[in-house]
Image 1 (spheres, rainbow, N blue to C red):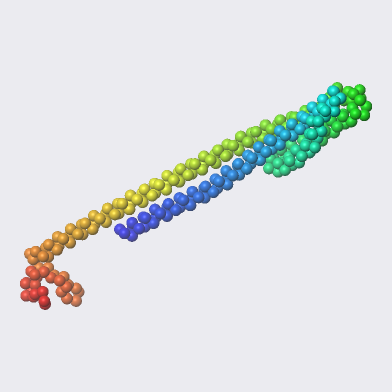
Image 2: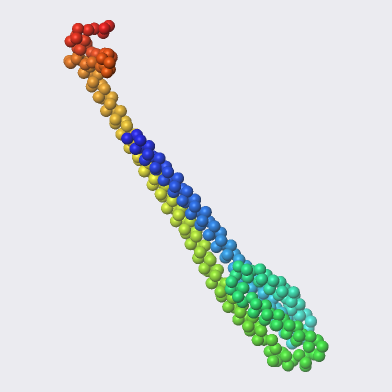
Length: 262
């Protein structure tokens, strides 16, 4: 009974350790998945911010050039002059972000090509205006010179933004799922450990109860036997295999004609 109890106890604690080890593995795996999802979502959000910044700079270049051509006031060129060095920086950042953003990587070559073409036409129109005046630049303005590139850039940018928004939503969903899995694993694991510990406590309590009952039974049996031994109603003797008497009551001694000294 003792061996069986010890084996059960050892099995129970081994089970607790196994559950804790499994929970640790699942927790670490889920933690890596969560961190990866957060990192990917952050990168996608950075791409969206970079795309918004690029669109703003392109719009500033367009409006600055057009305002200057319509008014002849050099102050209207300020947005264009500011945006001009910023746009190559935006494209350079796109190169870095494209390493982890397949949608951007796919569209970036066309976006870069159209951007260079559009900036060249903006610059060319301003040069014509500065050299030959509005009359020379007016045909380019009225013919929407370079507007085709702008429309394509806007179409690519809008389509890319929609794809990135979908990616962010998907990654947010994966993050939420990882969090839910972590809560679920933690809850099930904690419940399992508590259940096993409760079982062990009940088993230990039951074993203690059985041992106490056994000890009480033995004490009662010993007391009854001691009473019979001392009552001298029958002869009782204790000995070993060699025939040596170890103990005997008075009734037995009287029967065989011996006394305590013998």
